[in-house]
Image (cartoon, rainbow, N blue to C red; front, side, top):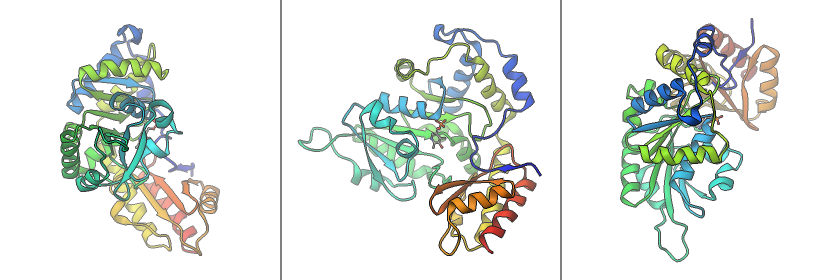
Length: 343
Ligand SMILES: *Cc1c(COP(=O)(O)O)cnc(C)c1O
């Protein structure tokens, strides 16, 4: 059997049909606003998210960094959930690019409006850093792909606005949240000033994210993208992959979620420690209490049997389902992992 790569939903390879769409894409110089494929993708995603405008950027990290740049000033404080991507997975960019500091609210990536209010610090105080932004990650990667409860999103964003703070949605996996909840992308995005979505995760595209918000915010985002070196030229070749993925539809994400669920239920029957309540989308995170081997050992033993998973921490593993792994492959991967975890 071919190797089964569950390290991330970013490992997908573009299909022949996606490559054909990319090859055929009409393109132009996007810095002159003349790439028709980029323009179409931006309009389409803005429409899906219910925002006035959207901007195509090279990565989810850049989308997040643009969001921070638009909504904060150096020295400001930003409220985030535990182990947020913007804090853990962006190489220190938030401090370097925007000079912000973070306060963590809640548990497992989720927090409540009450948590937000107690973390919030007012502007104009003699010693406090002003809280000018709250960031919500939906779904939450390091939380195990959990969905942020929408009633709490609405309450947090309402409180933030009342307190004069901005609201940003790290929606790299918002498509997963939409499919799992049955809510529209626009509903999930509605409470936020600025929103990002990724094409390179569940949608299976090789490159790209979009950031969306008001027309005025996106005009400022154009400058931030340029400052960060993310202004591209005939990027319609990349945008075409996104258009192709949106044309294909999102139904395949429900299969990814079902595959993750079955894998997680299998892991729950082993000596590994897994909270099945967190397995809501395409991510399965489990811990390895002694006497189980550590994560590096589990990764190596699984790899010897053709199954790739990620060591997320010394005793934590992440497995992620995606477009390029079938149900049968996920069942086989579950067999391999179950043998390693229940010797
Ligand atoms: C993957 C991811 C991103 C963006 O990552 P890039 O690798 O920069 O595209 C942002 N936020 C979350 C929650 C993610 O999982």
